[in-house]
Image (tube, rainbow, N blue to C red; front, top):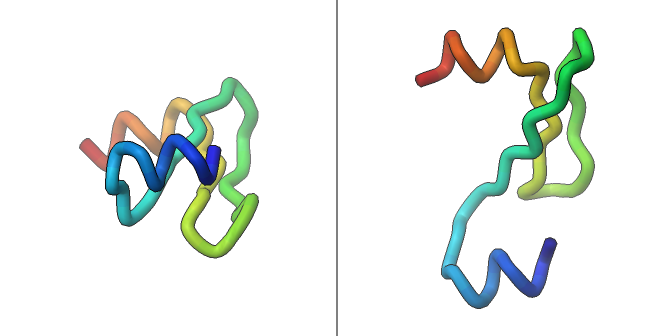
Length: 41
């Protein structure tokens, strides 16, 4: 994921998953439940 972030020049990366809680995977990588992602957009 870090290589993709560098190649795409991303400041932040979100991993959307069907769970129920948000948590950090790394400093700039966040796991978000699908329901939270829907609210964020």
